[in-house]
Image: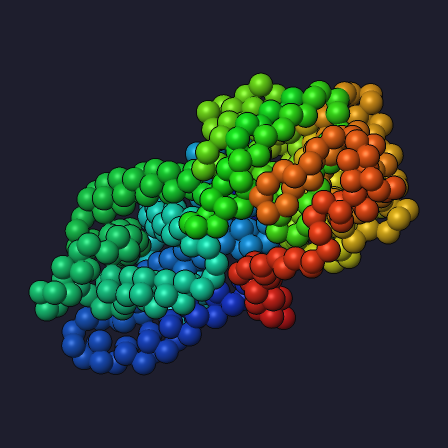
Length: 248
Length: 261
């Protein structure tokens, strides 16, 4: 337990110490909220969708979490390049514990990030169905955070340096975000897009988050929860396995 | 304490370590010497569970790094050749992190961390972030950190690189003290031959992945009919200058520096 705690604590300390990182990771969601939220609002309303910010906010919260989580996982590459990973790897600690400690740390950071975006969205005009719903929303925020931190860790265990970083950005994060129901409803899409959205884990996270905050989850809160929960456990196992195979 | 038999490591076609065998007894200080790119660090990585050997048998404190990884990891401490500190943490936090990972009980941990930090003269700076430190200070911290859990075996991969003679002397005195007091086995690599001659009881010289000579420095000098270990080393390994590959590591460090500005 102590070991998981100290690994978790390290991630949090690093997060709070890099102010530029916090500011930087807020800038993008804020831009999306303002530009899309106000930009598309009138069209969305004319189409009968209601207030677009109400629809968009959960998607952008999830986006903040997605990016922070994957990057937290990928931080392992920095640790590798800076040698700190060696220090962890030669320690008499099971790789599973290292993986769990890191994922919890990265996941917590991502949740914090999600909460910050949530607060910003309130300022921009987002009105959730009720304050008590935040607890339910937190469950989904946590699941999204953990899943994508584990995914980032798994990817990072296979990469040697940051060369592949842009690749992940463009071929993984952006598609995950855009094809997830974050920006537009998933109903009435062309068949191919529907399929992609359905195999995208983020879709369930956003659906759950939106359902929790606003009601009306498309897939149903319970199935969102179960699907995310199960793939998170699987991803943790894959991540631990890949992590244990790291050689330096 | 350390037993290596017919150890080989290949990276694709390149043989980094070529069928080496040696033994280090308990309480011994053993120098592992060789020019750049000779296979020293690769060997240390295999001894410390970071890398799997292609062929060969290793025993560390009676355990096999492939099967009993945890027992092996409990047995040693290591000071790596290149930096391995967390720059975003303070001096104390780096030490604390290490102590917790190695399961050193809280009270012991506090006492040892204070003692070690005072010894390397970083106690006054214990709450400073490591990223603001000079190379020499980081080096001292790494040495201190490797000793927090009082390992049975200490691996030192060029521990005194970039340190001034005072600090080098200081550190070796301390390590020799631990070696005598606690029977700590020390496995070291260094480029400073006079240092190796002074500190190590026995040495092996490795070149192109092969051990080409081993014994006490007296034996090595006799064998080559030279007066110092440095001359013996040059006689054995030749005078051509070796090139070490600068891998993606260096490039990355540069990139991160730029990135952080």
